[in-house]
Length: 396
Image (cartoon, rainbow, N blue to C red; front, top):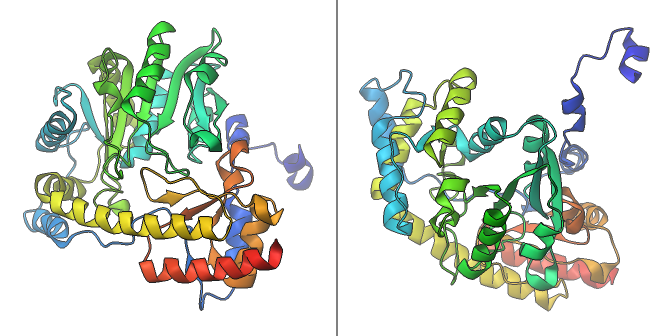
């Protein structure tokens, strides 16, 4: 209505766009850009600080030299799909037919969008943990679904609990969505934890969308691929990709794996929206799967060292933080300061030039916490902790 009054034109955006959150970044970004960049330390951006390993870049260059620059099959190059299938079988013992059960997508985010547009009818409900990755509810809403957040608890390391899931199941519930290791909490779920969720999914005949983009980044707890659990492959769409493990965020390449009939439907929607992923990026991803294991181990070791430093440092300055078992995020409480998440974030930026993300961006249960990304240099983390210590001392 306000648009009609001010312009004399009918409202031009759809109702579902109105329902999509702007994820709260606009206000924060405006503030960030109003502050001088000199001396700022960012623990905000959730991406590896490493460059893409050069041998992966060379594979892309070689593809361009050989004019591998045309459209590809909608589902992706067969050799890449075969490599993904081999990777999943060798790591988790789960077999996917690369011809019918795997589709290559433009990042795992597109895989999620495609998955929801494929399986959701208007009004279908999707259960998901809270806190959550900021795009989860928006992807659901854009598919005409209804997000149903399930509160998780800091004292349980923000793990999704089966009883909480069951309490929110209705006749309209169709999907359980989760991502482990988790953004923003760094939470990883054990095989036993996930098996309990699998029982709920089977009992209520629910689909599962399992976002495992951080699957290679775990510390001391072996990652369980959800569809590898008994009976789960036929009811799970697995999402993963190359951004986090191989420092390839800008290459925008991911994949979905699942039952043949669902992957066929996803591929159909993919064909009419994106057509196909980048040919050169696919050749780079193929090189990553074939020869990138040492790169992953090296980056993981660096993240592991940083994780110990940041978690210990946060707890020492009374920003209570559980030890994340995966990804590269710490999620400390700011309760000791008496501030909201946004107040803490804004004042920390203005007073100490340290960037963190307010926890309420990630759901109601994120209020009172902030997300700190430790995918940055150890020296920057140590300096950020010194500044945060001064800040907390002033505002206790």
